Structures are given as structure tokens and as C-alpha cells.
Length: 145
Image: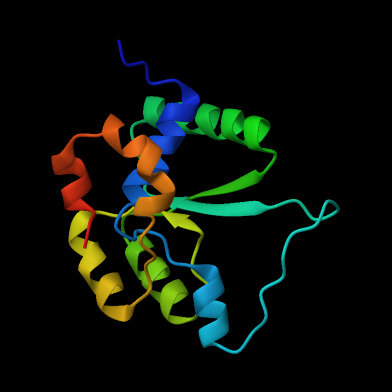
């Protein structure tokens, strides 16, 4: 039976965010703004910015445990930011327009088309191909453009 362990949960979150382009790509936006992107070194570990909107308390705790497991397994740091429902979407939009979006941002599907129109999203179907069979096609369709 399919188990939602921490890695699967974080993979699911990332897949929902990324498949079809739900992540704004820092590299492309930085290049568009004329700034240089620095690669991480052994002394400078990779830190991923994950922005999300509030969930039920149990879900938030589960996400935090999944992040800890993901960090331990992959040797990266995830900086988790809970956005307020009131003006969180405005923060995301301004970050994208300012060329400094988060690496991963969970979005409501009706907000995606604006980011698609801005060219701020990266399709990751090829990178996630091994995991795609784990998800219902209707879920993938909702976040694919």
C-alpha cells in the first residue's frame, strides 16, 4: 500500500509545485535582472526557499518533519516560510516581479496562469518523470501548462 512518508510527502509538495512549472527559477530571473548566480560550495551548503500558505496545525507539523527528513537525506537546508493568507500572494507576486522569488512556492492553481504569462515558471516534467506515476493524472493536469 502507498505510504506517505516524509520523503514522499515533500516530493509530492515539490511535484505539485514544480510539475508544469510551479517554481520560479532563480537562475533565469537573476540572469534577466543582470545579476550573477553563485553556485554552492562545500563551505556554502544549498539552501532552498520554500514558501507556503498555512495549513491545519497537524499538516504544518507533518511538513516540518518532512522537511527535516529531506534535509537530512539530501544534505540541503530548507528555509520554510509560512505566508499569511491575507497578503501572501502579493508577497509572491512582488518577489517574482523583483527577480527574487522563492525556489519553491505552493500555489493555488488559479494563480498559476499569471506566472505562466510572465514566463516565471520552469517545467520540470523530465526531472520528475520517475515520480509522475505516483500521482493522479487530474492532479498533474491542474498544475501543467
